[in-house]
Length: 197
Image (cartoon, rainbow, N blue to C red):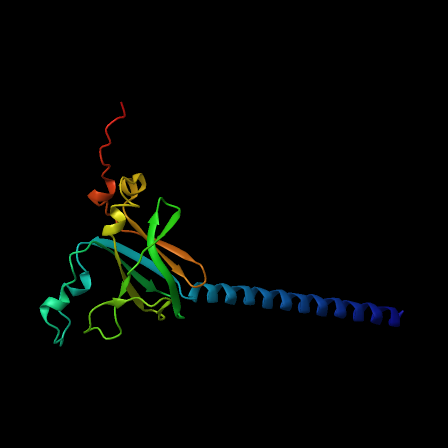
């Protein structure tokens, strides 16, 4: 009788050990899932803001200590969509491309995109993609609009209703869009076409 009880006690201890072990494994898996989610959340989270301007806003004020003549600080008269990308993550990320978000579902790649140089006393430079955005840092992109207003964006209902939007694509394929809240007259203008006889 005593050996029977001892066997049941041993079985009970084994089952309890298995339950504790299983609970420990489950807890470890939960911790791993939380850590993975935190890593994903911290892995270069980006936000983008945009606005449309008739000048390269970077040069509205002359950089401190700059010896560049005023004439070189003012960009040619050009309409830009200016997109500021902010990385709120704890690791750096990289922007693969930027452009105009056309019709709510279509990327319109823009040529001659300008970036801020590493030396802030110098004029903007052509972007060399991919552009690195450091952890808790930012990058600004200047996209010339004029040629697209006469072609891709002219008489565009989406622009009339939603304003001109930019998009930012990271190297991992994640896409972020940014509204400029600007409906440029040229984009919402539809040239009059006389009816055919």
